[in-house]
Length: 488
Image (tube, rainbow, N blue to C red):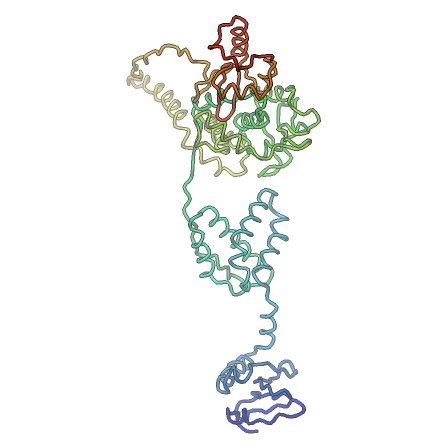
């Protein structure tokens, strides 16, 4: 057997059948010559009493010396007990990240996460994770790859951190499923982006303004009444948005004055409600606008469904109340802050909010300053009287009494009073004119007085009656021969 050289390889004859030329110096290293003239380098070795032959590469792509170097490495692996052919075959069978993503969503998220959580994970997977990692082998993803992905999403810290934790769980499961070696999670040591905790609570004045706006909105005949009631229930119960949106009348325990939710973020949950919530639920139940055959307390526009999206309505509500920076979830925080102001313990507040961990409720500890000061005053007052220390508080001057505003019935944040309004079409019907004529009057700046709240036109009954009276007495604006009169 000659030594394989470039010259020998290129001069090898082409025969009718493929044949092998073995190297005389390196055991198992050989050249395979095919009838079509192609020449490949192989390593032939014995493993478990079986002869195996592994392809090294094609001549022309690899030189003879390059093929020899690779054969030496493979042979060393065989001598140490390895099986390079099996390793190569397993490498071809290794799944790509695209497959791991699908398996993670199907076998973990679908089984262990709530529907709302799963929807959020699906969005992150489709938007960020799959496009970046889908063409990589699961075993080939390194810490540098994960760090580069996290850095690429730095403009959106919240999504970056959530995606990072999803990847961490995916690689943890990959180890469990035998797709990666143990303790090889590439997410390790990568720090999350710092997140600024946002704490926003309604003050008493802000709560009053919001309450006034919601009460006034109930008078609008075309308002989204379900959204109004949803906001009121959120603030009065401290529940999460999804819990109120999916609240059914069947969950309302009237006898014990409780809401028994079969499912929530922390599992089955009992919500203790006070008289205000009981009265509000009675108001909702009796309201003529509520569909009587809808099982949900907060009904949707489609029969038999609940209200899905109140963001647009909430933006209008908070703007009218002058609290445009308040999010819907801040209503839950506000419930907790008012509970703290009443001197309730964190354990009690945690029960009211349905927290499963004490640490979650502990975020409200700093709000307990006033009750703690009051408690300290009582204790030090009792002790001060015993040790002859003056415990009388310095009396502050009485605040200047402001005269009562003549606009006390004005909706906060607007110059609109809070009477009962009619829409433009309803006002037209009340006056007995065509709806188009109402628009024509507004354009010509004549006709009955109207008010504008946002983009909505409203008419007060009193103003419509005054207009009819003026027409009757002939004391309205300068006559216009071309201007129609009500009823014509």
